[in-house]
Image (cartoon, rainbow, N blue to C red; front, top):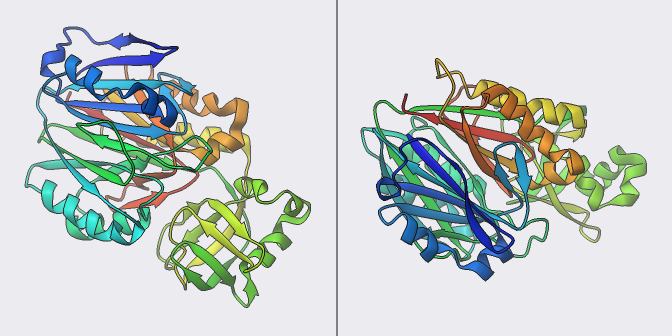
Length: 379
């Protein structure tokens, strides 16, 4: 695997890293992560295509771009990958609304499934797609046998629109599936949030898609405010500091759900992912040191398949973590770098939802407020 990375910053493109003997004509896959308004102004597809004419080119908007051990904003980071033993196939699905999410997952799986499929990377619109339904359909179609990871595109903290493109300039309503095919490709995963839970688990008794109306016998927003105490006056902003963990059944591992908005009239809360009736939820709170340490733990978990260090690490973290960590955001990327050492190429972005398996299971989940890491190596 040979890799070149380029950055668009302050109006100029420049090479920021390159492995020995890299040949742009042999590149099979380019992952370009950029701030939405920068992508709209730059329209970078043709420039990238001219550099890597044989590549499948995936471009998406972000809530922050990750390169090396730093986090950028208002830039584009393009990572061009020249595989030696791996074949790349891609598929694009377009949606008009979240009701088409499940069928989109089925279409992606149908297009990519093969006996030598090693992993699927998914880059999805983050505003028009129900990530939970998308991933559930992918899991079902692949029978939980194929590792799946990736993320939902972001739009800083604006939440206006997100953009994704495959072999074109990015636009709204696009989901891209990337299949990597090889017997020798090693793939690792790590996922962790680092949030502290408090209070008992309670049952969701009324909800619709991602809108939570009732927990137990109380209105969701009322009970949430009780737990927030003095922070309730700072809603909705304070919600980033107090997400919820959710388990659909008692046997499931909990996933974290970010609160996007609150409704004072209906006493409800809207989340960045499904909150199904009957699920078990628990309140959580931020501990900045634990959030940063979780990134290092996720990186360590992603090393399990490797005898040495991976060649490439794809980091997808949550916009909510970035807003909570503030000036300490880069520390969670630095924590991953400390685990990988200097020889692993790192790229990634801040998202509206993270896609990854967890705790060694192949079955993947939609996460919020986590650092998820996918590692790849042909060595």
